[in-house]
Length: 364
Image 1 (cartoon, rainbow, N blue to C red):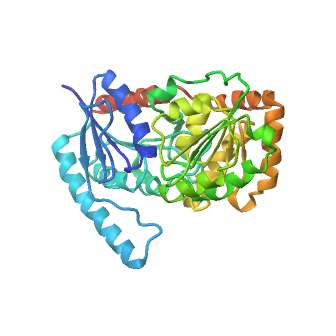
Image 2 (cartoon, one colour; image 1 turned 180 degrees about the horizontal axis):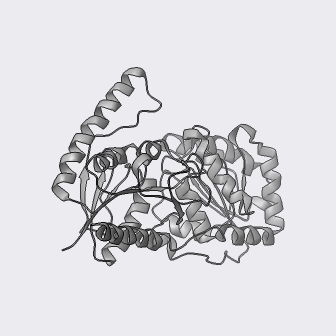
Image 3 (spheres, rainbow, N blue to C red; image 1 turned 90 degrees about the vertical axis):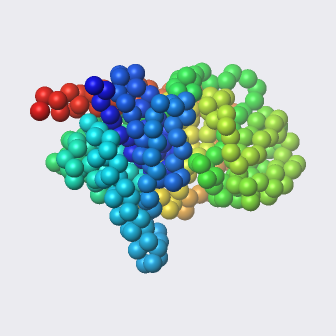
């Protein structure tokens, strides 16, 4: 009889992509996979055999008192929905990948005595995972060291599962040409801070340096015209400004330098492809986890962390000029960034799930 594994996550791509990668490996092992998310969550791309269910769920943090009451009600409603769904599905194991939308299924599974494990993508245990961690078999982590994990909960460092198109570009050589390819992006929502400040940094470079730059920069729709105008007389070799890029794997592998935020998804892709990065963490990230994430990269010499409050445009301009004068520096940093990558994280996660399922069978 085919065993069912439930994967549950928040609806953002940063949560969904890792779960999707693990789902593909579990299907190879002969499991039936079911995905539970919130109303934001998409179905798994290229995995039509995975059933998707959406539950009521919202984050409680960052809301007014009334907003928190509404969010708590939706989490309760989602838990009722999850309870009914799990009774129907009878999964062997439930795996939570973080985000408040994962809580209804994780908590309901624990009430039904269904084994649970969690995956934590950040260097600080997320708030949703903290709530769900009390009765889990183990927590699989993306980073070697994760703060706020109780000492009595086993942890296993497996890495952050990534999309297949990124894995195909793992440790690709940096481009050898006369250009300097800069990729600036701020995660799925973009970053207004980058739209405001990065043009000033690049426009201060001497014209002969700007002439070598191929710039690809993400800008929110409301910032797009402002950024284009700021670069009007830049004299770059090429310029691409857009709110969203569908060819991110290509952009990452073609970049000489990345300027981005400190989300786990961004850092993992930087590490897997092997590219140097200047990380400016989002200051409003929960528990300041983006700083903790980025510091893990900086520890091994795989990038530079600049907190937004300490940002110095003139200093960054000088730094970029140094990089363009000494490209070998970036190659060394790229290699160190890749040294942190675990390219088989999805397979490792699937193996752990399979081992726990076998152990559950033995317990019975």
